[in-house]
Image (cartoon, rainbow, N blue to C red; front, side, top):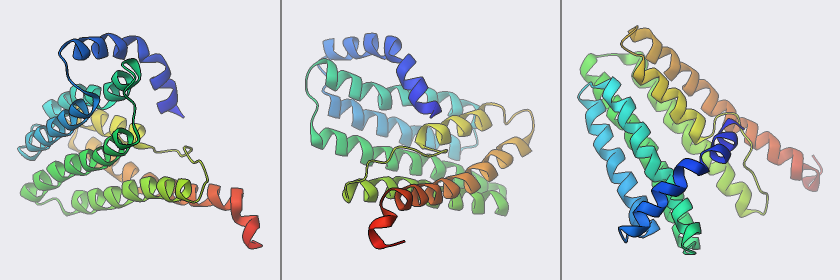
Length: 201
């Protein structure tokens, strides 16, 4: 996946940031919560219609999302609760970003975009749920076309270049609405391929 490639090559950037945060005495969980609170601020910016600045701020806020795990590994403070907190707040962060856009489009009376945002949020939640449920029955599952990284990446592109044409963001929301749900179905299919034979399928 594209996200795995980016994570592999981003370590050289994240480790110096993690060292700096460690010197400040912040714990990985504090960094995780701070990243979520920053995303709430970004959602407020988007709700006001500042799409370009919202896109830039998402990039900055995403550093907190990426650096908490690096910090935890660096100082030897990885924990099951930390992983749970990170994953849960990731879902909330993504949802609150789309809430900001939802509020903005309500003010613009754009019905299509509201429907696309709703479909995207549903698809995003189902992608995450499919993985969590698969792992709950002992099936490791990370594959999928539109993981959280791809979704946020595309959204940021749409926000940053929305000034070129308003239709660009709408087009990207359409892609997200379709392919997040396709990815959820894809994960269902992958689990069926791995364990479906147990049920005689």
